[in-house]
View 1 (cartoon, rainbow, N blue to C red):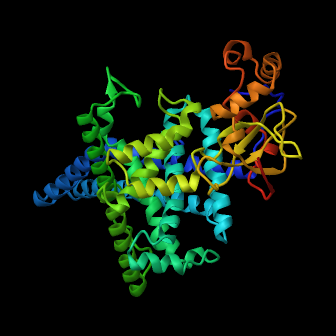
View 2: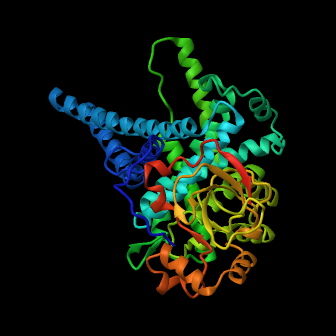
Length: 477
């Protein structure tokens, strides 16, 4: 449902330009992005290792047979050139992974708890809104939008669960309690826990590029994310993805050499890197039914539901993600506690979701019309009472200055609110409102008379409309 807007040329805020840079670190084919490096690893690694082994054998053979010095030198150069090239590719992969993880933390971590929540809500909301305009770019959605969204959600859930002392590891609790957001480079919580978790989340996600895992998605010779896998195939796919992540870590990344000559610094570097490798391996190999595994699994499942990418995706059903995931809890697929904390954090309406509501007069009585809002904050009072930014006045979309806690009683996503408005506004008036707002009202919406929700990506394309997360007075409705 996209309202009719007379938009000038689309413009972008500084934040949106930074967000695009974050996405291109993960997916931007031909420009050394993490996707292209991982894809090259999975498609070429075996052949490269055979080529390197063959070059080494040829060099050894030339020396053993005492061939001409020129031949030996050529064979040695061939081997060392290949070794250098493959080592360079491995270090490029490390660099890309670290850059993507650091970039996410830079954009989402503030100096205080409230600032971090606000930055994270802005990032999640912007990812959600702009993803709807990328439905014809499945690789961008799958390997940029989803891993970023998933990793950020994991970070905020981690904070919440540590605050509740859900994780019992004493070291984690100490890092969390002693975090120093004003000095991120020296903050153990960020460097020893948050950064490795983001990196592990990305590795786990990109493990699905494993060649055998991708082959399972092939349908009649064409790869398709919409191919329905049987339960056995699904289990096999997940196993292959996990093995792919482990292989990527061990061979596509591996050791990170120290660039320097000081012995103490080299030993410190090697120790720190071995600790990082241990954590990454722990995170990507943890059992899905463990507390840590559930944290990764729940954030992945929610991201897969609310972001487009599959043919069955329907915008107006996204608030039912809570019901879907709670049903999965009953089947033993997810941790009930972590799912509960997820919806305590985000509510049932995703960040950036477009809502339609009945406004109230100054005396608290409902008006005979509806207005538009966008979900923009975490931790609603109740999951079905979202915190939103009002973006219309007298049914004209604009960048307004008020936030709102929206009651289900006046939220048109819920049938009682729609029935309330229908009973108070003549049918002809409702038709006029729809025809004013939507080009195709006659064809698509008149049968229902009222929109349940709306997709704000067109509204959001204007730079002036992109700051939905600045400080604003909160109203109740």
